[in-house]
Image (cartoon, rainbow, N blue to C red; front, side, top):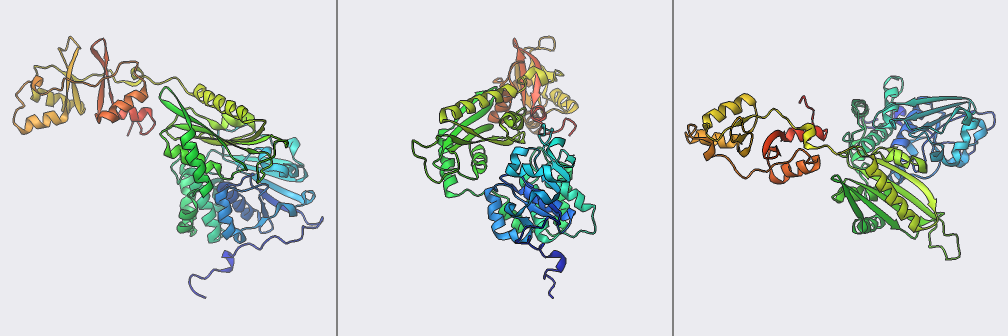
Length: 489
């Protein structure tokens, strides 16, 4: 046997028998949610491994397009059972992962009432109201809910406490892939140190980086690329308090899988902060356009996406009334409507409610520093250098006098360094100051302040009220307000 040959412990679990179990054989299963993604699949596979070799994973209805590609090559490595082979009357233990909604289980939601034990494991927080209740299950009901970046992290933490379980390389890779996709490779705001620790442990279990790299990215099909192009051309953008939100309605002659990837690509390519995309197709996922006399009910997929920098937007809460869910900045819902005009009205309403979610805009007066360090035009550059050194600032306001706070200009650290190099520290500040000053008022909103700093490549902005300097705002102040750095950094 070579060093790289698989050992018996690393071989995949045997497939489910082609015959359903008899009434005398209690069955344990783990349910993913419908339109199964990597996190739901991996959490189910990991939980099945914890439960034992007799436990099987069941995907109740559909898979994400990326997961379909992955399973086309890797399905034999995992104990996945066909839902048609499951007899709900012999279920002993059922786990539900990555969701708390019966609607996301499809017809498998009816199986819960036959199980002796039901475990619900989810990571979506803050907790949304679950519709899986004691009266919905046949026996005991246990919830495991924790605020981490991926449901797979919760499963990996349990696996880490079981030294008797040795993951196969395929299992470690799938779990690592799930954490990568649900945390944006540890870059999303919902990421925690626990996710990073779980991922590090999986790498130690020989998770395959090449496979992760191949499947973690969403590659658009030719059809999805055409829809993306149409989405970018047809999107309508509204801007309120500097936040830009796009609305997109796409009609297709048949149901198109993987529209979440189209929505994410549109968000990344367009200069917007968030979007609501509706994909409209004939009900029943038909392959051809229905005839006029046929039922005109539309299948509608609503997808919401927001950039991590956006505060206040919560698509998960917004989509709950429509049976949807997900994360604050990435959620979806599926519903039926009678015509496209209703869909357009719904999307417009959702965009309006996004703006209603936003907190009041942050203004300059809310975070400016009122500890103003300044010099007068007749002070020397040497004196200005001493003031600058003592304050630790990178520039100084120049006011008419210390008793009169009227702004006449600014000088920078570079100005002082140049005067020192030329041995001109004895000269007055008035010969060095920049009189054309870019400033803001106390009621200038944060997004305008950020734009002025970036567009003019400057490090600070004086806050002027009736011609007088009343505050100063620096790059660091803006970064802190954007939660992009710590005030104690």
